[in-house]
Image 1 (cartoon, rainbow, N blue to C red):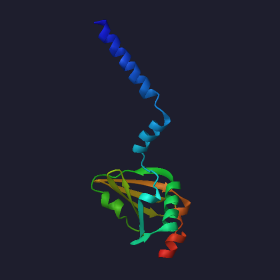
Image 2 (tube, one colour):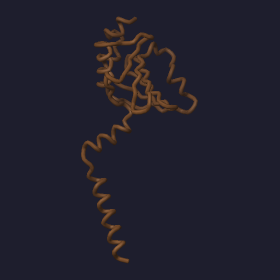
Image 3 (cartoon, rainbow, N blue to C red):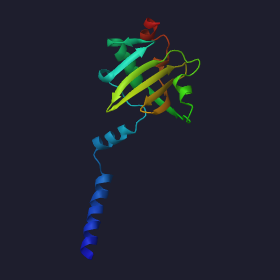
Image 4 (cartoon, one colour):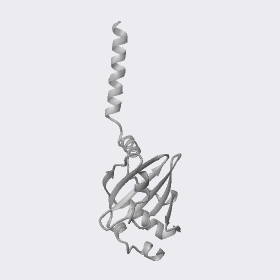
Length: 149
């Protein structure tokens, strides 16, 4: 009877040791799965503004501004209020970013205001909204946007 208990204790101790001492790359991979505001590469993204597709340097500039933005807070969406976040009043024209994340197609609506940037992430049947702080995106006189308007 003591051998099975001893073997079980050794297995549980090794499992505990493995879980508490994960390598940095493994921890970063796990954390990236739960990130709300994750970075977007220009290779797998399609950026549109006012129905016009951004290409080249303009696309890279918008994605860099988006990636450098600071996360402020997550906005809670109650069931049935998704449409209020997807198409808010007095928000202007959003920048729409389409990204492929694994098997999922993710669509980001980026609404720019003077004091913050609202992002609405739509994937599968879920809608997640959060706010960012980015002086570059908050400027309505951004060259990319100014050229398209």
